[in-house]
Amino acid sequence: MASRTIEVSVFDLIVFGGTGDLAARKLIPALYHRDCAGQIPAGARIIGVSRRAMTRDAYIAFVEKSLRDHVTDEVADQDVQKRFLSRISYHAADAVSSEGWEELSAAIASEPERVRAFYLAVGPDLFKPICEHLAAFNLVTEQSRVVLEKPLGSDGASAHEVNEAIGKVFREPQVFRIDHYLGKETVQNLMAMRFANRMFEPIWNAMHIDHIQITVAEDLGVGERAGYYDTSGALRDMVQNHMLQLLCLVSMEPPDKFDADSVRDEKLKILKALSPITPANAGQLTVRGQYRAGANAGGAVPGYLDELALAGGKAKGEAESDTETFVAIKAEIANWRWAGVPFYLRTGKRLAERLSEIVVTFRPISHSIFAESAGVISPNRLVIRLQPDEGVTLQMMIKDPGPGGMRLRQMPLDMSFAKVFGVRNPDAYERLLMDVMRGDQTLFMRRDELAAAWRWIDPIRAAWATGRELPKVYTAGSWGPSAAIALIERDGRNWFEDVQ
Ligand code: BG6
Image (tube, rainbow, N blue to C red; front, top):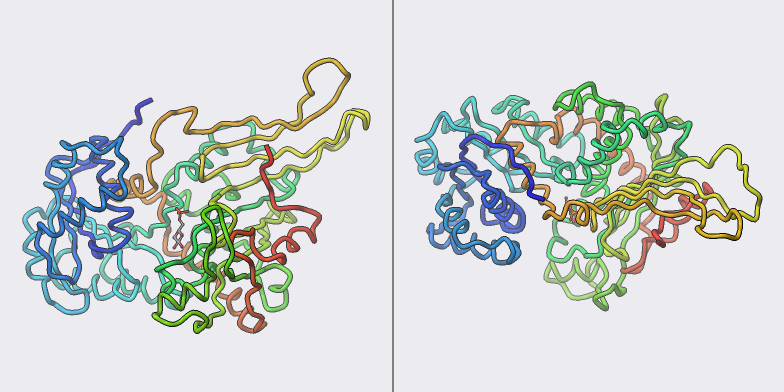
């Protein structure tokens, strides 16, 4: 089945951090895929910017390498590649001085009417100086927009400062704060499932749902990102943004329309309704962990501190850190729909496998008409798989086929999107980049949402700091510290394991 594309108008995309890791791994391949799909209009320009002096040829070589490394052979097409490369140019400009800005400005100025997107794939300390230079060189037009990568601050106060600085140059409708989880197919499907089907919404509440689990597990460690990661940790790297966004989408009230403000208004209400985590309850409601050396499917893997030492040029055993690489949280949404329903969140590096899913466990049936010999009646579960193998499974009770009386068993009603649709699953950045060009902010975070997320996260970090407890150790390749298992088992529940 061919996927449908929606036209975007001709644009200039200026990528700050154009020689960086995000550009190589995500942005360039995403734009190439959109070009393959015929969605990039003739005349669109992609301009890489970084501090480094580089010829266009050298930048083209960087882009070609990105395509070789991150685009599979099936979509590697010589003609498209030629067309794609013809759109690319490079300019050196320094974020914190005026060096190079005159030239950059001259390169863009020829097309003042077209959509102009400034993508800041750089550290947040550069957001302010870049925006100031954009303003000083009169580069911000009515049709301009700015795209901000996370992390957007390291706490509420620093996020506020960044947003203030950006707000002086761009109006809020021009600001696109990316959370790439919102561009994932299954995350959008979550909204389709909830709001385009009659059957879920009437039972999507505390009366019928026992609890919800959200797991974002990664098998990789922090590797070369150890330096950055150590200043962040799993709470800020994953929970403040991706996990909370998933929580919002699974729990929000139906927006009256599928448009940017209606959706974001509803998400904001959830963030505001999250019960606070304080020094008094953090020990009961949160677990943080840090991995030690262990093994996964690929063999032995080092521990976090060794990776950190290596990244910092130190010898093994010389790094110290209490940064968490794993977090589990029992969250509650204090509103009419969800009072009393726990939301168990967990995320971590170097876990047993790469797996992201939302599991909705319904309450048991109110009365069984079957004899005990029919077997146990398990509660229904809806498993929404984000990755790998995107899809949805509804676990239901059915009669075991054949003679022998009424014997019940649980079976999955399974829909794997890859099998059903047989199309390549577009990367989140493909969708989000095109939304930027269209000016659609539905899948981007609004400033007040971000502030509300930090208001819930900051006290958790403060509580950990007060408790002075070190992160619990877990072995790489496991499912995290045993305290995370206890967190849910104390409530008589288990982390979901798909045994089908
Ligand atoms: C990023 C985090 O935002 O998301 C990374 O900074 C993490 O630490 C990544 O690995 C996970 O994204 P995905 O799409 O691979 O699940």
